[in-house]
Image 1: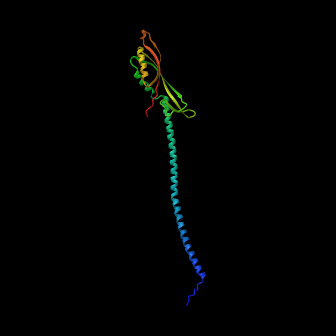
Image 2: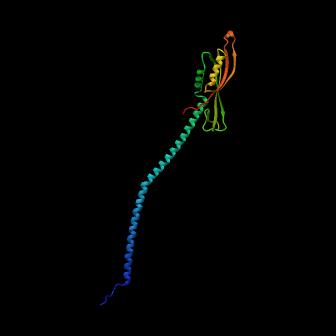
Image 3: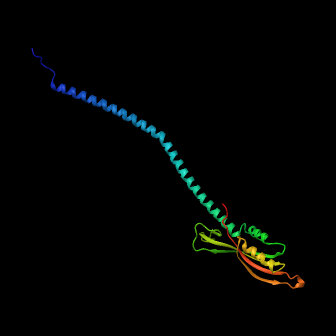
Length: 215
């Protein structure tokens, strides 16, 4: 006897559709749950990491500001050091000591000094040599504030006396032979009368040689 299917086909199709919808609905619900969990986790991570990120950005900005301040401070320090070097050069720091050493070496019991005069000279240079040679400094102009290279010099003028011409000549030769002086020039001389001792008065000039100072 043949089996007769009494269930309508439409019912079977509806059941299959309901099952399919139920499967897709379950999958969708699972996706929604997972998406909600992932969103909540992401929101939590953002809430945790954003303050850290802001702190990192603030620290980075602070570090950049500090680097800028340090660079500016170093630039000011270098400028002040250059100004101090220029001021020392303009004042002739150490030159009196060098000249005293030269004169102490050249003078003896037959020669004496009557007067000594130092004159500072400075010449503005059109171009700035690099590196700066001895006797050249850079200083800021008073008004414009621009750096100006100047060649400094020290002229020495002296008058003195000697027992005779030979003693005077030996003294001037000792000055000319000293590397600390250049352009030593005899200017004039006069001889006292015999009753006044017959001593020789003289005057001379020279230039102090600029030398590179040891760092």
